[in-house]
Structures are given as C-alpha cells and as structure tokens.
Length: 393
Ligand SMILES: Cc1ncc(COP(=O)(O)O)c(C=O)c1O
Image (cartoon, rainbow, N blue to C red):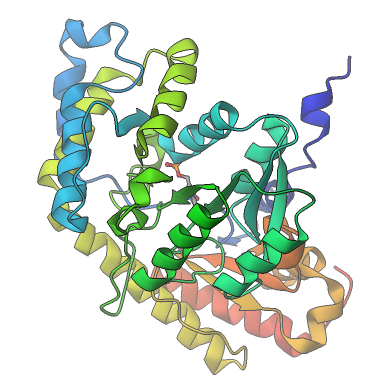
C-alpha cells in the first residue's frame, strides 16, 4: 500500500547518524553522542515526587481535559507575568500541549489550508518545516545559515510564490544558537501586521541562556497578541523531555483553533504529569540555574577544545547546541559524509547541517548532552579526524 502524505516526507536524515551510532555501539565501539538533542540530566526531584504522589490517586487515572487542567494553565500564565511581564487570560490565551512538537504540529494543521505559504527559517528544527508539508502548506525558506535578519524575512516575502499567511520563528535558535533582542521582535510584529500574517514563535530554549543574556518573549511586544502565539516547553529548562509538557499562549483565535482540533484528537495528558508540571513551574525555578550552569560548562569545554585544535567556532549565548562550519579541507564532502567520518574515525556522533534543511549544508551541530569528560574525549576524536584529513568513510 502507498500513502501520499508520508511519501512527501524525506527520510529523517538526523535519524541516520543515530542509527549508525547504535550500530557502532552494538559492535562495542565507545561513541560519544553529541548528535540528538535529547537532554541527559535528571528531572528535578520535587517534580518526580509530585508525579508519584498524584499517580497514587485513582481520580487522576481518568481522562483529563484536552486543553489542560485550569491550575496548570494558571501556572503558565503566572510564569509569563513573572518572567516577561505579560498578562494572559487563562481561558482564552493559553492551552497545554503534549510537548512543543505536538502543539506546533496541530496548530499548523488547525490554522493553515492546503497551498498556504508560510515563511520558515532554513536551517531550522525539522518539524518547523515538515509540519507545513504534513498539513499541505508550502514552507517558503527564510534563508539564514548562521544569522537571520529582518532583511532575510523581507527577501523571503518577495520570493514567495504568493502572499504568505504566516511566519514561524524560533529564538534562541536550534540549530544555529542565534539569539535576538526585543527590537527584532518589534520589527517582526510590525512586518506581520503590514503583510497580514500570523506569527508563531517557538520558545523552547527560553531559559537555556548564558553570559547574562535574557531571551525576550515575543508576547512582550505591544500588539503581539493581535497576531502571535508562542510555544514553550518544559523539556529543556526543567529537563523533562520525556514528560511531554508544552504550552501555546497568545492570540485567542489561534489558541481557540488549536483547542478545537485537540478536543477531537486527545483528552489531555495524563493528569499526574500536569500536576507535577505545576510544581515545576511554581516551585522549581532554582533548579533551572543548575541546569543552565551544566550546559554552559559543556559549551565552554567543547568550544574551547575545538578552538584549541584549530576548528574555529563561536560560543553561542543560548541553547544546548554548537553550530559549527565544517573546516575548509572537509567542506566539499558535504555534512552527511563528514558526520560519517566523525563517527567512524573520531567516534563522535554529530548532526549533519543538511538535516535541518538544505541551507544548513556545510555545517554540523553538536548537542551538549554528554558530560565534560566525554566532551574532552570527543575533542580528541575530532582532532584525529582533522589531522588525518578528508577521506571517504
Ligand atoms: C526548537 C525546538 N522546538 C521544540 C522542541 C521539542 O520540544 P518538546 O520536547 O516540548 O516537544 C525542540 C527539541 O529539540 C526544539 O529544538
């Protein structure tokens, strides 16, 4: 049998390196995994404890609410007030989702029509591009290999085959690590209003920030609620990737569209997870600093190490990734072949830039999901590869 929708999706390039890494490990190789951005730190204990306590109560075993229990929605609204001075209405401007990914995918399904054009950065987190494809919309690339500017967005509007309906952005960015200031978002909102576009901002790395940088929420911009929603997640800030907790907040029409679609698809996440997520948001801010410190040390270890061995990389001031231009002698191999070489000869798994879109070609992304000793070991492996030069792996 053949089904057209899955056929429009290319093989998941990022999964190929993971598959090869597993294969090598099965053969007894010690491969350091800087590939997939799967946080390795444990979830803070009070969140786990609350989950266990809530799971023991039979009334929490029933179907929950598709849009999330009111107390959890209240907690995320309070979070926005505390961190961003943004006031949100609990009923109309906030919905709980099963991670940012589910929220984003269903939101796109809810608000686009087949053939709609939506501006999406390239390179970007793959679901940003492919949620459009799955919904039958056309993702028009905002081409920005390292640093995305307002001029890049304007160029994409000009290039688009028809007037875009919306724009999807995400800062701090995966994979590039780019951060922006509030003025950038002010211009995005102005542009969106001028061109009659909605805006989705994926804010998954809101709190993984270093060196005194503060990531602005797009909802801080006056008038943003007229056109924009923001997606947040507990996966990275609270080290809860497996729990699947996300939120979509902002424009009430967009939130209502998502709520309606979700009311058909799901009954909300397991209630003990929602109750534990309230503890995460209300009582666990002190743990975020510890998580951030760990990622920062790992960033320093990797970037200092790579610079020492002659691979010049910039230190990102946010996210859990290092986006590195492939050194000149290896450029012509392409990012996939270079990552295979890193894996086979250096025993290091990294993500090929092309896995984030065609304009990511020429780069690799390292995820900071191993400890500092392992990162040091990875740098030694990479050094071996750089020393021995390009070859087919
Ligand atoms: C930009 C971005 N958005 C969303 C996610 C996934 O978030 P969640 O675990 O909440 O689905 C990731 C994970 O890597 C990401 O990089």
